[in-house]
Image (cartoon, helix red, strand yellow):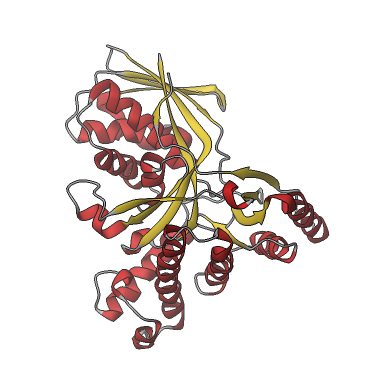
Length: 374
């Protein structure tokens, strides 16, 4: 067997903008999902996972669609990728997939996209070497959308495939999705060297898992579509000012749209500052503004996420915000390297006072995207 890896991600800024044709700015994590894969000739897909040692899934390639609702939920991600390759006309006679993941599940760090992308890049190398990175991203997203039932946008898969070490990925989702190739107009690698400025990016995993396959995420997406329809635009990306939102009669839809419009502006602002080589401390307040918008306008935060962000800033972080789809997961905080331990202690104390379980914390930096590991 050969081994391929794909990373999780954190989004520096740009939550819930991807499915609104907007802008995102993620980095890949040094935490990855591994996929060891080899060809088999009997027409079956066999999936095992180190995290599920008592479950082995064996499904015929021709039975993937019929068996979707009968296989364990975790296995639908890799099986969905195989099914999408087959749907696109690629000949897969059978494959063994052995999975192992270091991306925390349910932490808002895109463990599911890392899994799908690790399998996708393995299948490309084994069966379909002409598939482009953009097609690979579409395969991985289709697997989650259609086979798993998670209505994700392009952010997570794009970050897992396209990010490079030492950089944040600025992605114009509309242009990327519409282009024939991933060109410089649609995306840009922006240097993100925190160590040079004595900074660290702290991840605070609240331990409260979130799931994309639930009503909250899908409801927010539907609300954004409804707001765009009221404004007569294809997507909220086409709204260039908050004032234009006064035409939305429903208060909830107006607030959902306001988050997207202001979040797109925040992405552009952060990207401009980082592109110029400015001290990244300057983006801290923008991160904190993003959290307030996700909490108040988009209403996807939780008391634990709020506590982590508030405690981090109170302890000296330059900015902090929840990451991922929300309803649980993690917070990122931009901190001076010498103050990281103090910020961690402050967050743990706040959690203890609130009766929350102790959070998991770790420092991350921008890592490489999906690739073959051996």
